[in-house]
Image (cartoon, rainbow, N blue to C red; front, side):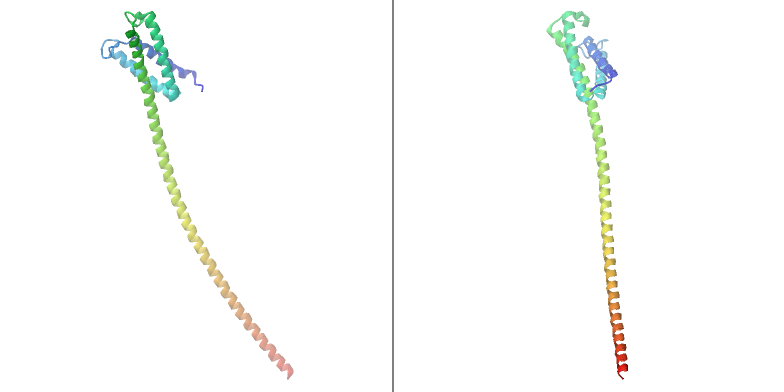
Length: 205
């Protein structure tokens, strides 16, 4: 999957935020210039970067980006802390110093991950609301369609009964006409026979 080049600017900005977390003091609640105010801005930027990266790259890729960024910046910070600790305002290198730097990067990474998860949860909740609205809409229209089908079925049954009734009535009328015709034909034939008999009698006389 290819992404536009400008999408990666958000990743670059996030890497810069992670890098700057190396320079913040470990005393989180210190109100020195590199203390609380710096952490507040860094964590806010990290959270916002997580939201932006999730929006651009999707959940799975954004989590990969955050994980790889954590590993890359942690490795870079470890190398710098070993070779030139003064760059991070450190007096020297030690295990606790390296751990402190990694923990600072991890804290920033956690807030970025929280931004990704928060935006993902928001999108999922929004999609669920939309899905529920669609389901309600389809259920309502399905119910309306069922009711309409039931009405049409009843109308068809009524119409069918009317058609059957009319057909039976017409059949009865035709049978009545048939009987009347049979009676009339029989009467006609009887009359003709009577006339013929009288004619034969007159011829004999």
